[in-house]
Length: 299
Image (cartoon, rainbow, N blue to C red; front, side, top):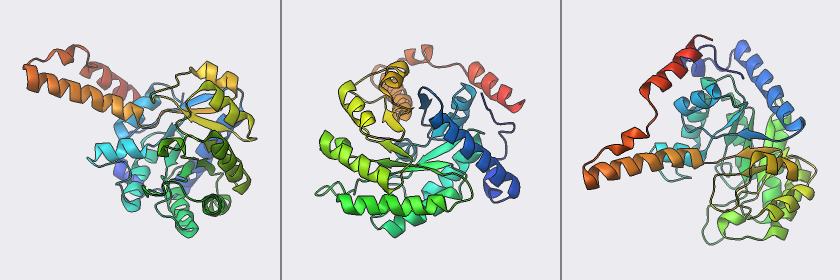
C-alpha cells in the first residue's frame, strides 16, 4: 500500500509540479502503473472526485486511481461534460498531488474534435502529474453522437504520438462509447477498439457492455489490456470473475460520487419531508475519518 507522506500544502505541491523531484516521482508512478497492467490478474482503479476522496481511497489500500469527469462536474454543480479544459487541468494537478498513487485521467473526448486539439490535451494533461488518460470517441453531438471511425482513429493516433514523445511512459486508454450513446452494436464496438489498438492505444475500454458474454467477446478480440466499468446498472461481476474472463483493469466511473451524492440527497429529503435525522445512524463517524487522515499525516 502506497500512501502520501505529506498531505498538507496542496497548492504548494501543485505549483511545484515542474521540479526535478516531482518529475522523478511522476516517472516512478508511471512505471508502477505500467506494471499493474502487466502482472497476472485484474486490479481495481477507483475514481475519486476530489482531494479528500482520493486520499481516503489511497488509505484504503488501492494501488492506482482514475479521475471521473462526471463526479468532478457534479461536485461543482455542473453536468458531466460541462467542465472546460483549463478547469479540468487544475483539478488533475490537485488530484495527482494528493497521493503517491498513479493517477489516470478521464479526458473526455479530448475537449475538441480535431486531432490537434486532442494532442494538445494530452500534452497539457501530462504536465499535471498524471501518468495516463483516456480519450473517448463521443462527439457530444446528440444528432451524431459518435465520431466517424476514420476521424476517431486519427484522434487516437494524435494522442499516442504525443504520449510516446513524453519523458515518462504515458498509458493511453481509448474508449468506444457506442453503448453509452444508445448504440449497443457489439460488432462495431469491437471494430473500433481494434482500430484504436492499431492506432497506438495501450488500453481499450467500452463502457456500458451489458453481459459477461459481451465483455468476453471484447477481451478475446484484442491483444492489449481491457478496462471495464462496474458500478453501473446491468451486468454485475466480481473482480475475480472479470479476471477469469481476461479483463485487466476495473474502474467505477462516477458511481462512487453518485453513491455519496445519493446518501446526501436521501438525508436531505428525510430532513425536509419528515423532519427526522435517522440518516446519521448510517453516517461514518468523524472519529474514523479523522483517524484515517491523521495516520496518513504520520507516514
